[in-house]
Length: 309
Image: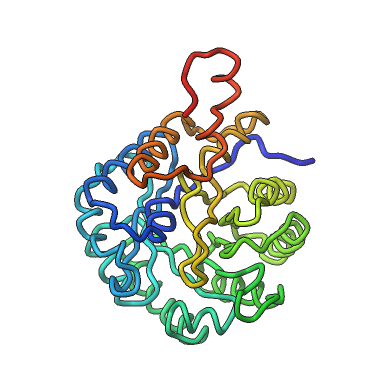
């Protein structure tokens, strides 16, 4: 197995995780969690999204969140957007980067963005033209890259075509998203290997869900073909609003623990991530699907220095 010496983790819990919760998470708590995550060593946080609050009520306070967080030097604060209006709001809020999603499934794109894939790509071109001159990084993502709940199997050619469209716009940091947790190690190796071969000047990240328990295995498969950036969520919070699946994202502390166990550097303090996850667990009043949160790390077990998270 080929594993890197270091990987980069992107924390998406404050957006992808929080948006699944029915109970509104107070702005104070969102800010507290993001500030905790900022102190953990993660270099990038998807802090919120600028979308229609009627569709995603949990994100109705996105402007307030961005105004109140403590910006830590070296941390990139990103927001999800789906259109030009979202980009305008995100820019006004002072984000460092915007995440723009286009689906590899026409049906999913229509249901999730209320646009065709072609319309989303046209909007992306406008967003790039808007953001590039003012130094705001545009991070495109291919959603439902490994399968769609409406169309079934997604041909790899569609994912590759979208990645090539992104590259043609000058976008070199591309995220491939297992939106509903349909990937397995074989499909991850095949798709990410093909993408890296076709677009050697691009850097690919993998957005991981653990809906069916394959998230960490998929991370290792991606590492084996040279991927070194992964997206995860504190406590395993998250899922997929379109399909109403209540569990999904790979737990950040589980991914950090995996890397720590294998000698792969992340620069992330797993105990701070656990503290943030525990705070959310207390607020939500239910156990979160994080193994490390329940069992602790090897160091905790062997030394008793710290209680399990």
